[in-house]
Structures are given as C-alpha cells and as structure tokens.
Length: 198
Image (cartoon, rainbow, N blue to C red):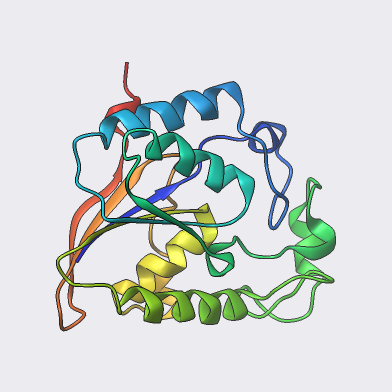
C-alpha cells in the first residue's frame, strides 16, 4: 500500500498563534493557495481513497485535492482529529500553563481535553482500519500536525515516545510511505514541500 500523509493548509488560527485542537479552523488565503498547489502536485497521482479528519481545515484541504480526482472516494473520519485541547483551545498558551498540569508530556490533560496517550490509542484504531485496505491501493490521509506524527510513528512501529522525534508535517507537505502486506514500512519521502516553491 502506498500511503501519502499530508497536513491541512495554513489557517487563520495558525497565523494568530492560537491552539486549535478540535476547533474547525479556517484556511487562510495562504492555506487555500497551499491546498491548490497540493492538488496540482497530486493531480497525476492515482489515488484510490482519501481519508480526512472531519474538522473543516482538513476537509476543505481535501476537497481542493479532490477537484483533480473527482471519482476518488472521500471518507471523513473523527479518529484523525487533532488532540482535543479542552480549555486551551482558541488560546495562546504559555509553557507555564502546561507545566502546572499533573503528569508528563504523554499523560497531561488540559481540562476537558485528551492526553497524548489517548490520541495514540485513537490513531491506532485508525491504523487498524487502514490495514484492511487492499495492499495495491494508494491512500491519501489529510490530517493535523500532532496526530499525523503519531500515525507515522505507528506505521513505522515506533513507540509513542520515539514518535515525538519525527519531524512535524508542515502545512500541505507530503510524507510518502510504502507499506507491504506484512506491515513493514519504507519511507519514500518525508515532509516534501517541492510543490510550494515558486
């Protein structure tokens, strides 16, 4: 299976520096242009299925790609959402705000939100679904910076801790992974942004 991971285009909220989490997010002018350039980049790639987070910043990015692939099936999946940041969502949060939370990087939980361990389990559920797709297919997954790191780590059979050493996918960058029938992965591209260069 050929797996293409990408992240939504830049959002207005990204520009303001606020945390988004489960907020929908609104693509900025730059984000919309990034999505168009990504769609153009992938226009000649045979894509059998597109999975996207159901949050609008990802869904609207996916729709731009689908303009070049009108017959490709688009599946919205809540499992692909970013980490739920609870009371921190929509705010500019300081390091000190995180430090007062009980637990560590993997177990702390903003009020009303999720821990990274819970996001890890959620992404594992998605990966189990992904493995049921035919090995001959090409699948594009449109997601978020944090949750896509964890999904990539799961595909590469990394631990949660090791996954945090992976580079964060930049807006509409592409990471390409070849996944064989035994679940062994081979990295083809990481964080490729050639299509964004003018």
